[in-house]
Length: 286
Ligand code: G3H
Ligand code: ZN
Image: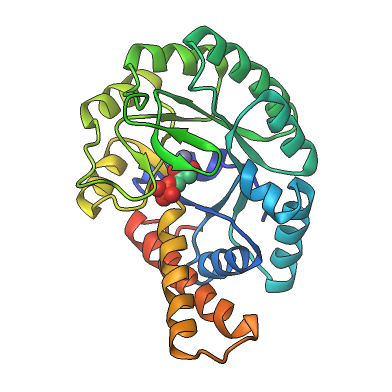
């Protein structure tokens, strides 16, 4: 069931639901997310940032872990292993050669022409290997691992530029930054739905919404109705996992077996992911 994102996102776009990308931080995340997907009969995207891959021991370790769990758990739903916010052609190439089935090249900090040039190179290599590609224009605010974008740098994507990038590169899906933020929002998010509609009309590819944590359900539904077929969630799992672990540690000052607190943390991730799959409409779609 290890596949690229291409088919699952096209199906999502066609049938008006979004597939969740849930980021991996360690073994427990991988277990929880795969089990949630299988129970919900939902396609799923395992997002891996370069920082998280480094933490887990590298791209090859991640692929081996995912493949082993898929086998041990008897996972039947479609699963993609996706490099999240790949920072360079080299990083994408390394992930592809390690067995990732999908990559994001995030050259959104570069001028448009350079973004297009590097994205095109990644698409060439990726498609040769049957791997799907996501690109970004504009800048998602907030912080995710090594990627920090302050308020002044956060930018709304310009639809005409998005159209050019998608047409010239042949990416499989596209993330126009339209006001979403990594990490918790300060107040209500202010998503650029007009821009989203415009980008959808111009490009026709499945759209990606980053910064899924803290977006109200009505905005999620509106984004999906405008062609968003992939929604990324990381922080919400981290918050709920940490809350569960903190509760165990606070309630039992003598506990020292990590399984006694990492287990409940894992349950919290699974429950969070199941909730998102239902909210995004991907449950029972595998
Ligand atoms: O690329 C990952 C996502 O955009 C995660 O955003 O941590 O705010 O849920 P989040
Ligand atoms: Zn992101």
